[in-house]
Image (cartoon, rainbow, N blue to C red; front, side, top):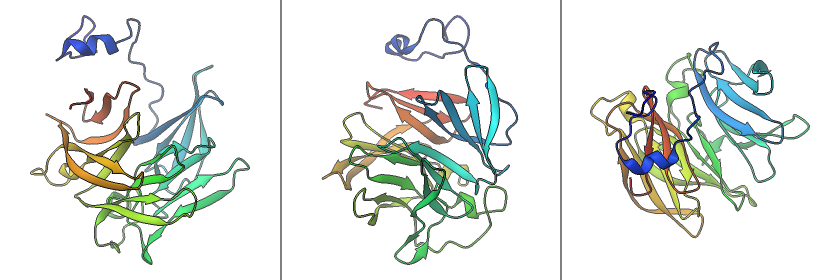
Length: 259
């Protein structure tokens, strides 16, 4: 533990990751369930979801203000930006992935696979080729708290890829309990995907898996990357050195590229 109690350092290599003046700061406390932060450096603002309250929020660091960006939000969860800087969002309520155009109109990226509705897209990333990858667990249709209760139409809780040119949707993984956060390695040769199935099944693994990305479009050689001692892995990001920073219970867990 460092002197101010903010970091629990288990490996001294992590000390190099700590900015000496960094402090934990609460930006906003008015959410029922905050999710999906995405930074817009060109707008100098942070967007995030408040899922049960059906709204998206906007934080401006200049004056520390928080305002409502969109309501209703269709129970949006995870967000990212595409190669043109546009907002890409996962919507529980409509069971789809959408893109917000610069004029504010909404384009549907994916809402069905093989003619059947998706479960409730959760988190999303965009590759350098423009392909959109997203996870599709069932959380948003399990109750009316973070979506609308409904039956699953898909045969699994999968991971999908939408081609950046043809818009063809492909299921790239089908063996997760509840796929959640996902992120590429810096060179995009690997993709990490969290399985948060232990949130419903206490006997399930609290882990993040990693896959090799073959030909930029297929996942092969899946294996366990890291296991959390406590908490459930959810959203995460990979830094420029390949270290994985993941949410999980009451802490942010950090793993080196070897897990």
